Image (tube, rainbow, N blue to C red; front, side):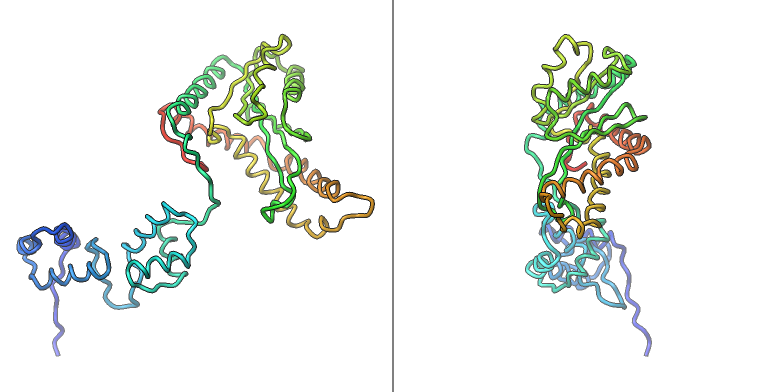
Length: 338
């Protein structure tokens, strides 16, 4: 029995017919222009109505049928843009409700993976992140930053981060602050401080810098943490008035490369604490739980900092922030978690 040969039509022909049909246009005339039989064109339209796929992609011939189509994945992308915390099971249910197509969670995962979707930690965005005032403050910071470099000033970054001893489990006791001091990208120093960075700590910090560098050559970069609210008062004191303070704009962690340095550092501390969990749970006699846990945090903090926070890491973090400097000068929106 001879094999029936069917005429193949280019994708753009099918797409044109389907686009006109979807818009309730005269698809028959379009089909006639391309010399497509009306019955064939109607078959395309009927399939698009059943599947929701109006792209014009040809149906697979032979092999295992593909259950989740591009139209299904596009629908899931739209849903994820509104509700990124959807689970695979919930997304499979959405596809079934919308298209009457039953798919497994693994099928959904593979389809999203093909579109370069991965699971990430959720970040809460702020409405005022990209308002005109904050964009202007970011631009002003970058201009002043490069002006300081042009005047051969040395830029010091003063920042803090918090640790949770049970960070491997996502909950628990908040231990103590960490302060990192970066001199350009050549040297990094860490100071373990109980409590937060207050004005008295900034005074000690400036006196420490003054032992090697004249304060009129110094620019200290601070973020907008609440503990830095009155930091300006320190720089107005006669002892420190030669030093310059430069504040980052609100909601601008992407311009502060210490954030990326801290991220790498804290990941290493989390891994260390996870390995030491059995020992952490065994509290010796005559020792409080707080003291015992704090010792393990201190045991991890200093050695890991010296091992991980290298000039090379700081240089890479700084180079990463340069791209965002240019975006700030162009008054572009900054996304959360960049």
